[in-house]
Image (tube, rainbow, N blue to C red; front, top):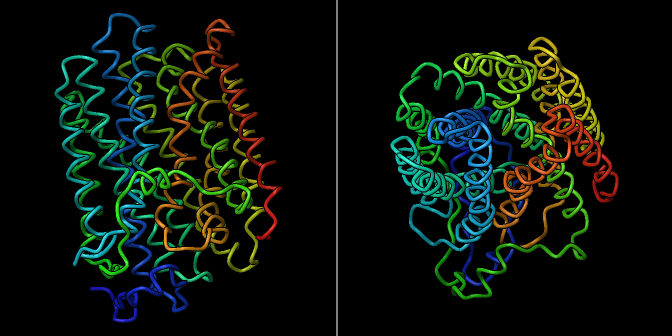
Length: 431
């Protein structure tokens, strides 16, 4: 059970305090933060396992040529990512306007998980590209409802003095999920159905556990806004003139995630077509690479988050992280065999670990005022999701212009990461 100090529910007085989100001042326990990070890891295990490994393998099975598989992967990933772009801020804003007795966030976590697993099951059984795309769309809708409402808990429950630590722990979620997901996939291979569904079920254990114990916020019915076209359209917009620091932080994350999306989406094809690795070995090779990357990330993320809280600095960490990640992409671009690729993945772990230890704390510090905190986090999350749609056509263009050169592709990824570092220099309200 959560200690009593963590179990106080944040409620609003009708017609007044619902219009701003109270910033918590009491520290939460390490137990609460660990459960929070575990739930985030579970959600990422469910959604990243297909995105990184099984979706690419499935497209190769249902298409005739490697070229057709690459095109199919771009199509499926792009359509699913577009829905994720829409779903994340929309479900966040719906969460901000939820008056359920269960709370504002909990219903969306539980319902989203059920929908997401249903989508994964359809993907595992899909006989063709249409069914695969439909299943991925359902999974993206469900799991983005989970992710959008989970991240809002950082602002709902965690005081400013602990946000670096919390962000550092949450920063471990994605790399641990990548490694855990790759392990689960290779453990249940070659069953297509199990490779899609089992990661979702394993991740769901942590999602459901956190949702059930969460001391959720509540919104009075008197403060609930009426649904309208303006309400839905407003889910996707934060005024860049009024909130320039939020905007520059968003731009930086978008550029960083463009580099990340290019790496993760095409690393399967990179290993097969560039490094000439056997297709049957790819799940094992990716598991080894992601395990190495995750080990580096764990160390850097925890240390960076605590150090950021101690120094009360955010920007310098994000800038350094983006530059290091750019260097990693250049190393991978120059790799001629699996060894240098592993070295590049280790370096990327340094940049990744520092970046994800700080970026959520940074955006929480520049968050726009108001009651739409989950919506604002949802808009921010779009910067991480949108590249999944933008990266495939950009990558396809780079590969076409460069005669299929993956070295050129990863050099572009490195340049994008460096631009992400420059964007943070424009942030003024946070050191």
